[in-house]
Image (cartoon, rainbow, N blue to C red; front, side, top):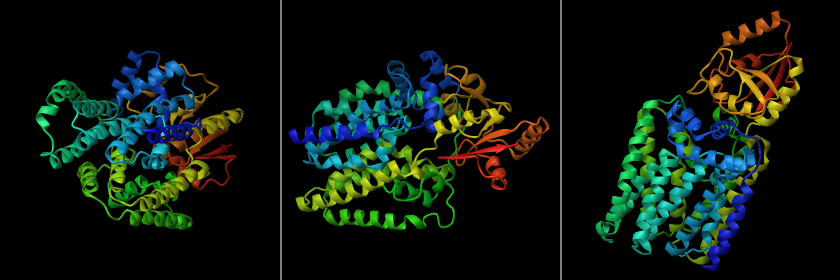
Length: 495
């Protein structure tokens, strides 16, 4: 018990250190816009008129709304909303590791995971859903391997339901649980143990299922490209913690020839450490194979759906499966001599620590600097009109009030009406120009030239908001250099 508590305290300190007050990024701007509505009724109206994917993590926005109304909506405060859930995640994994795998300390190194490190520091639903997945799957493992206590049945179903409320994709835990139940079907008195918990939660799951079915009628405007085996490899690359050893996210979206060249030494170093860890724990036991099957089945089902539909899911949507990956890693240590366990832990901890450090310190791995870009655009505002090609809501949060002259549909709601629902202070005005067509760009610049009005263009160099890339193509042949270069943005002055 003492070793577990000391390890938990150390992990808690590490999780607190992950949270920063850095600039918000595109998705976080949407989160804080929803959380900044004055009432829950207004928040629900914004969700109901929006996209199905946002409705499918409605509980997170309600939670964030309550958090920000209690503690404020500064960048650090918003991300700190993840900390209670991160602590639950750590407590669940640690307790399960101690009681099921007899590893009261070794589990702590798993929280160096770069995937976890990144999403603890992002104001999105992924940390709460990972915490609920860890608690739910941990309770099931405790029921199977430690003691058939009915409390574990209630916890497994309760946290599974809560996780789905935070994000629909937590439902992927269902097939994993069925694998475990089928494998150990003869080891427990399933009907007697689970009858009352199932009867209690059945109405809640039915109601939640009806709500989730309704959300699909709202449609979705988001697209992430088509599936493929390269992207499948990228998912494993990210889950294994190599994100900080290779190119940054923007480069990987549109990789140029030779983009990977400078990173091969780091990737080779990471691969060597991963092989070292794998060799050290090469002897494994039945539980490792069962947990591997439990984790791979929902992953395979989701991937099969993406290939059938032709639309892939971003890596972050597999976050509910991360706790299963953690438990599988702990199961691999079954029966392994202590020295080999220490070798594996040190090798993987080194890999993830280096990847974490690079993700945290190298400029190319940082988020696009919306805060500095908005401030710089406002500082140049005296020279002419500001044209903004990045996310609109994030710009408004940083004081750049944007008007949508072409009434484009940037979100699944009317932006002009939506932005008036929050009371953010404004330091200046600009024009929302993301996703303009080349004809609209040419018409606008010709009009400005006739009026003899210079234009300050804040060009987001890689952003899903600006899908047409008309501004990027225009500046690809522009003869003058940017007046200011920032992380993720270039500022141009067109006279």
